[in-house]
Length: 305
Ligand code: ASP
Image 1 (cartoon, rainbow, N blue to C red):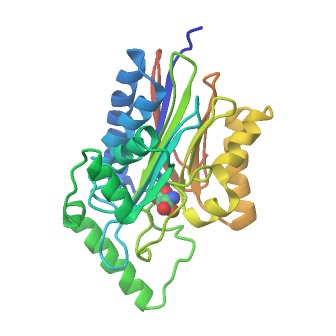
Image 2: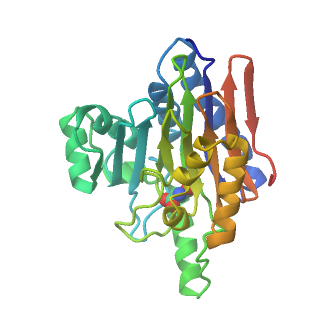
């Protein structure tokens, strides 16, 4: 039986100022086009989410690949996960440098390795052995982020710590899709949080935290302050609710409500089930997201839902 395909993407959830809204919308739109061209021609949800995320990794607007937030020592260290809801195969990379598209490395882990997750040099070596080019870390660092880091570090030195990261950007990217064969997939990619300690890994690339996909429940991608999301295994928490009967719209809202009430966390989530029903929720002032299906597309950077 053929299913109507659908794609949902996000480009972060935070207090986006008006000055960055257009760039986020443009980036989300391009990601939708890339992923949709895969789905519309009968391609897999897995391929669609990979292509959608690559577009946003290549766009410096977002905190993924080039243009990522910097670690406290001024480097880019990235995390990415991709997961296939049909088979539960997954590929993750954590704390990687030197890669232009970490989600491509994650995809290689999924398809070419008996393992599920690689970190740091081992992940980079695996990617290189499978044909990916390793680049200099400085190619991923842009002036905007050097400046942002300097400001964050000056504030920290002055004792102005924002331990919730609520005021800073959460520009992680993600995509979830349902293909014509009724299969779900999800991918999330990030440079993590600003001024993070070297070696820190967030929720984005951890299965069930910032990304998850299972045809029997839902596909999900999150963005936001990673530590609370990891503690709550938030992606799986929401997918489980869908499996036990909640509509994705309700499950996403409940998940973000749980994140707020249990740990005062901040962020957003996109969620999709194998009937093509989706949910978007965030407790940040704005979230960049977009949806595409056969009848058209919708772009949303709306004020708090
Ligand atoms: N969740 C990501 C992390 O904590 C950050 C983000 O969503 O922007 O690494």
